[in-house]
Amino acid sequence: MYKYLFICVILITLNALDNGLGRKPPMGWNPWNKYGCNINEEIVRQTADALVKTGLAAAGYIYLNLDDCWQSARDPATKKIIADPVKFPSGIPSLVQYVHSRGLKFGLYSDAGMQTCEGKPGSLGYEEIDAQTYAEWDIDYLKYDNCHTDGTSPKVRYPPMSAALMKQTKKIYFSMCEWGLEKPWLWAPPIANSWRTTGDISDHWYSFIAILEEQANLAQYAGPGQWNDPDMLEVGNGGMKTHEYQAHFALWAILKAPLLIGCDITNMSQDTKKILMNPEVIAVNQDSLGIQATRVKKVLTSEVWAAQVADNGAGVVAVLFNQASLQESITIEFDKLGISGDQNVRDLINQVELGVATVSYTTQVPARSVVMVKFRNARSEQ
Ligand code: GLA
Image 1 (cartoon, helix red, strand yellow):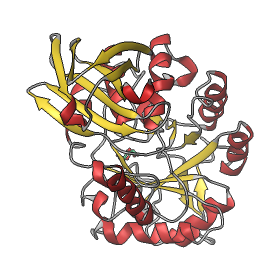
Image 2 (cartoon, rainbow, N blue to C red):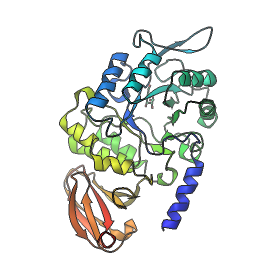
Image 3 (cartoon, helix red, strand yellow):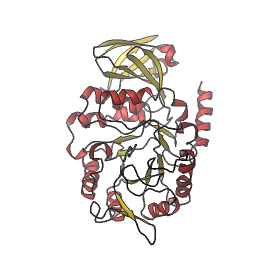
């Protein structure tokens, strides 16, 4: 089994975009889910400060990315992209410097079409000059959207930006956002570090559930340097209950999703902070094996997602998820996880040891909630 795993890891590694980035899923912040188009440099500076002050940066959230609406036009003579002078009067380079001075990384957004989804200038036909500009500005990450295209396939429009970025000495993480339209997991690994697998998330339980459902058969395509992206986090935006956000976060973590916070972190509740900063849940996301969870069991509204992990005590992590509105008892049989014998069980969300289980593990899971446990072979830990 370990030999097979090793071969898989090697194959995945050889397939990934050759920029050495995204060996673990990126963690950071993006304004879109909270602010939409109403973004400005003040918010960015305050967010940079808050990432550091709250401890989010120390917990791993180091990318501060912009989304749509930072740009306003192209210079008619040079064709260079121009930042919105009202929203970003100091310009992008000085903002990048500010963010870097906080020990963070900076991300930008563009689109593989004539215009972005909000009607700002896109990069189609301007890939070379835009990639050069991003590198000149010392950008670390690019999200590349799919609106207002010329009708050609993303398979035609995304590679030129990937190639243009790869020509720069500055290494730039490439995040594709074609919404899973053409099954990007099948063709994007050599050209991107991650790719969206679905349409946009919104701050509602049913949006989260619908997106989760679409992740069920994608584990084999993820690995160090190449991640499936089920879209950004809604935790803290107010449309779901705390236990629902906890479920969203635990599942995104075990799916090895990029963990991009989408709420106002200058004003987070204690509950939001606790969910986003849980070190043992984050550790699952950032595990060095980079194995995305598979859905190993589904019975009506109860399901179990699981993935092998190597760090902080090797084992298998399982998320027992109850989607129903009443408490359910959920059992996971160890043969479904590829493990056997006595297992030490640890509750990762509450960070407590739960004792030893053999053959299977059963627990009560409250309505619309998860229990996230790690099973470690008890004999090898004696
Ligand atoms: C698309 C993307 C979103 C966001 C908006 C911005 O809908 O999928 O994530 O970037 O565009 O306009």
